[in-house]
Length: 401
Ligand SMILES: *Cc1c(COP(=O)(O)O)cnc(C)c1O
Image 1 (tube, protein in one colour):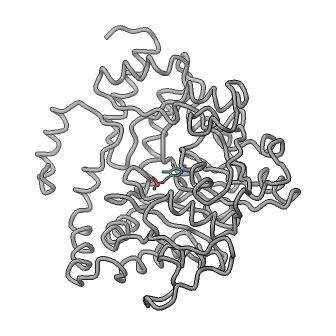
Image 2 (cartoon, rainbow, N blue to C red):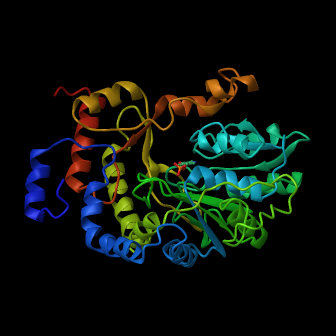
Image 3 (cartoon, helix red, strand yellow):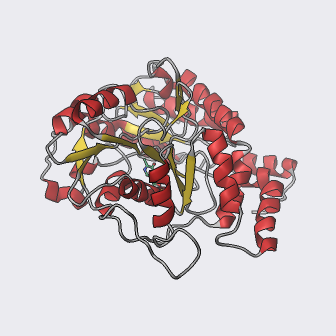
């Protein structure tokens, strides 16, 4: 599509086109294009596409925005998790407790870092790891616990922290989705030893390709992660590959962030507060229409308010009876949805060797059957939200189209 389409031509186009994709980055890109072009131009004019100054500029700006002592830019949220686990000193065979209801990378990162994921259930009325289930999963090999902040709110960090302290576990956060979420002013990822951010295009702060970052207040973790992302070296010289003082982390990899991605992210970061506010507005609009409809069991706005917690609606996820039929109805009406997540990790074929059976982690399994994510991004219009709600209401109240 033409990025410089006039706004009236655009309105006409969207009126004629009633399809509402689950996610669409093109409007955001058009809105910010002049600024993005300028920052990308700086990278291209400079001629330094790797090891340029843009990644550093973005890292410092994100440190300011999050309050993190260190931001280490890498090439994806998944790599950020692997680097975080390795830099935090995970040893081969160490067990890391993770929720069974999350994106697969939470658990595969543990495997890539040489550890063993151990699955725990999620809270009865939320999507975060259940501290009581964490306690039950602890063995003499448990080294760390990695809560995940999914969709719109933080996991129960107080509950997890208590269990971790009692058993001497390191707390690392999969805060890939949690940019802007804070507890008593502390940003997600800084509530334990370290965390990550993903800048996958569909995330709240999305790049135009893959990118991620590690966040920590711990100097040693940051320094180690900076070395690992760059073949294990600290400078630019090819003479020395010192390895890392932790004996199990001797090798580096190549996981640098691209300067062009940093240029896009730096531009979008300046608009992030406004985008987050717009997401909240759209989410409230959904909630007003959908809460209380027959079959709707949970909406984001129904979650209990936790004092001191700043939420960010990354995904507007509802729990609803007959989820698959509703998703099919919406698809037929030209409305995209996403199932986060269709299958809990303890029942995924790639983890079958861990020996789990259906029924082991019932809340995770139940949410996989009822969760449906609705279209949400900062450039979605009120009218689009209304149309999605009309279709959902029509379906749930048995009205005919
Ligand atoms: C997106 C995501 C990741 C992975 O991030 P990528 O940048 O896609 O590698 C990890 N964990 C969670 C919970 C995520 O949502």
